[in-house]
Amino acid sequence: MPYATTPDGVKLSYQVRGHGEPLVLLQGQANDHRWWDSVRDDFAAYRTITLDWRGTGGSDKPDEPYTTRGFAADVLAVLDDAGVSQAHVYGTSMGGRVAQWLAADHPGRVGALVLGCSSPGGAHGVERSNDVRRSLAQPDRAAAGRALLELMYTPAWLAGHPGPYFTIGDPGMPAHARRRHLAASAGHDAWDALPRITAPTLVVHGTDDVFNPAANAPLLAERIPGASLQLIEGARHAYFEEFRHVASPTVLDFLAAY
Image (cartoon, rainbow, N blue to C red; front, side, top):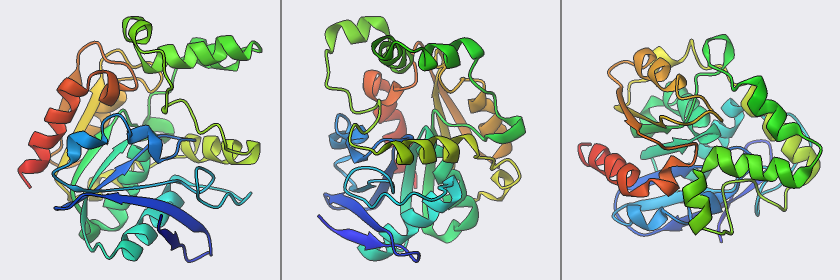
């Protein structure tokens, strides 16, 4: 498995599969590349590139501040190590926040851009409700874990898919890295940078997502010049997995135009 080294000396584990045009897949907060395992084959026409964020998987886990803009710099280090000058980018959840910085700060490195279940953050982003926060913070950790699963997937889907689930956090993360990831995602604010994005952009979101409220999707689409918006009816946060029969073809059709 290859590793890239960032300018600040952090080793990042990354994974490359297939051939064709490069497509970077960026996962959510506190998750490693396995987030994409269930749908990665949908993008087999591309050379898919994933990485383990610093703090996750096989990457180093320094106990120092992380930011979404810093994670974007980490993605660049991976692209450089892989010899990729430009790639399409598909970021979901916190990965979509990172992708916003990548496209705004480094326009020449991004072909087409897909932002899934993401948010502009900051004062303009729509935060999850206090009820959702309380459900995740309850002292009964089993109940909190169940609440997280039900924010990601519909009950009907969960009933037929007992797991394992690779979208609810990397179980091997140290506590300090979890805290650093949470702070990075919470501190995201790309509102002023979004109008600088020149990449063709598709915004995708599930209509029933309350983990990262669906109201963020039109905010992104209206703020990014020329962006398109696709809402997936009935989908929650992990729309790309449960509703892959809709989501993957939607993304593939968009990418095929560029």
